[in-house]
Each structure stands twice: as structure tokens, then as C-alpha cells.
Image 1: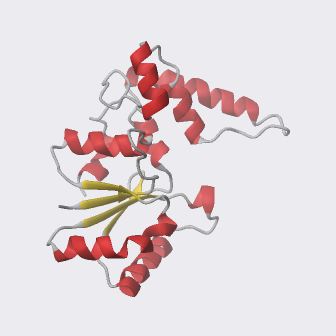
Image 2: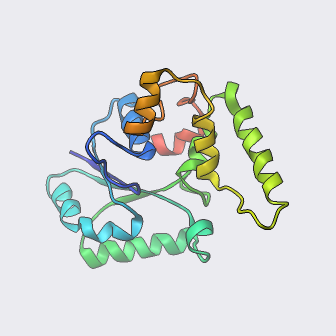
Amino acid sequence: MNRIYIETTPPEKDKKTNEYRFFEYLLKLLNLEAELIGIGGKEKLRVFENQFKDTTRNGDKNLVIIDADGEWNVGSWNFESECRKLEELKQELNVDFEVFFLPNHQSQGVFEALLEKIVANDHKRVIDCHIQFENCIENYKEYVTPNRKARIYSYITSFKRSHKQNENFKNRGDWFFDDSKLWNFSAEELEPLIHI
């Protein structure tokens, strides 16, 4: 079975991160089977050496999906140098994997940048309101401007939910990716990810 390694933490019992749930839903939507593996950060890729090798030995593929987030974590990040580092890691470990950088394998960004692009059209105003809030906060030096994670969290928490939905959100990390009123999985911004 193909394996997809994503940057988020692995699930704990029934609790999964929104990123993990997103990829679960995307695989289901595309009618694809693959084992999802939360790696807990791209710097931990070498820990999965044996899994990479087992997958290849079985004739299956490894796909690593990570953020292109130099702006947030490493000031000197760029696409070519990140590709070079990963190629060196592949050679050092003698493993094979393909890589996809979120949000679109071209631009610098993060998973949340992709989520922002697939917000349902009817609710983009929630994102616009949060951006106005961020712009306001920037005027005050004693405050920290919220990041994109806060923007997307603000979006998903802005909707009324049933008691059961609320419990699933709090206790299981459910961001309701299967709800087309909240998310647009037909958005063209998903095309690069869907066609890897």
C-alpha cells in the first residue's frame, strides 16, 4: 500500500489533527487508498527510514507532503534548497520518496494557506473579517498579530454546531471537511495536490 507522510502529529486514539482529517477526507473523496502517517514535523523524516524502504520493497510509493514554510520557521527557506536537502536525505538513507510542498508545490506557504483557498465561497467574508482584525492588531506594538492558523481556527469556530458536532470538534479534532457548506473541494487551488 502507498504511504503518505504528512507533517502533522500522528493520531492519538480517536483524536486526529485537522490536517490528518483533511487528508483522510481527500483520499476518500478521490477514492484512493493509502496509509497516512503523521510524522510530527519534517525534521523527523529520517525516523521513517525503514518504512520508506518497506514501502518501496513492496512495489508501492512514498509521498511526503510538507509545508513550504520558510517565512514562518526558517528565514532562508527556498524551494530549490529544500528540494536539495530532501534529495541529500534520500541518498544518505538510500530511500525513495516523492515530495509535495503545501500549499501548491510552487509558493511558499503552509497547510492553512491551502485551507483558506478552499473555504466555501458563501463564507469567505469570515476570512475577510479576520484579516481586518489582524490589520487592526498590527497597529498596536504590544500585541502579536495572529497567524494563519488562528485565521482558519477563527473560521471553523464561527459556525453554529449541534451538541454532537461540538463534541466531535473539541474531542476528536473534526473540522467537518465533508460539509460542502464550509469547504469547497472543487476549488482549483486543490488541483496541484490532487494530481501528484
